[in-house]
Length: 85
Length: 240
Picture 1 (tube, rainbow over the protein chains, first blue to last red):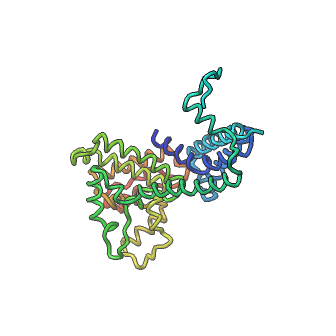
Picture 2: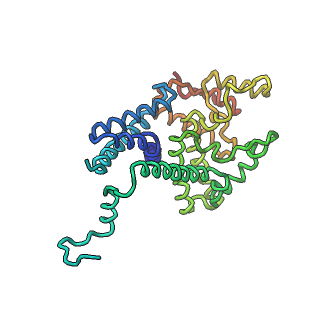
Picture 3: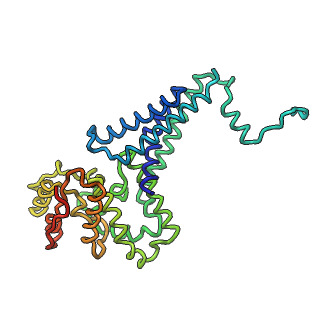
């Protein structure tokens, strides 16, 4: 449980959470927002694995993608809510 | 002035804050908003990072009563006092440097606050009761990460084997050959080893191998490990 919460926290405060949210805010379509977040999560995992897919921890990657998708969707929602035209 | 004849009731405080937050601004420009947001971002992120680094100091780590035993043991080791004057503090060995791993470690460290409050290890007797399980947790973490925090300072590539003691040079060469990691041999490097630590470490390695299915293909040679530690049980736990 602690491992799970720590991984989620790391993803929220890492690229999937922050950049996922920012990229999500660039589109009104939540599907695009979610995809952007997921892509960021995969890229981050790849970078931290020193560009070797063999070093990617599947558990961390799944959590990061989940957080990235959520962040992207929330970003899109903010965009919809936060623009008037 | 409030219009008492208004047909709509005045919204509550939180609703008014919410509405105000999402209302368009007719007062400031986009440029002002961007610059103010940028500056606020620097201030908030700086504050966040500063707070995070503050929790890495030795004073912070040992501020709790339950860390006194740890601190006393660590002060007897070469990582605290040595001829070169370089010191590794708690966070150097227990907190990863990379952001994602660091945040994860910080969140997981909340359990230490819980146990401090609950008094789980607030007496020497309780501490000794939990010593083996606490050590096993750290061993598991270090074994899983290939002793990542050790390798922030110590790397096989940087070792000058001819300068090392013959026994150390031989052990390090064998560690490279057998694809071992620092914690396989250096379990008691900063804290006292609990009784039965060899068996516990063996079970930690076996559990990890079972969890991962030994997919990384690394061989954990207990023959080599036992030889380093002076034991006589030479059994390979997992083999390629």
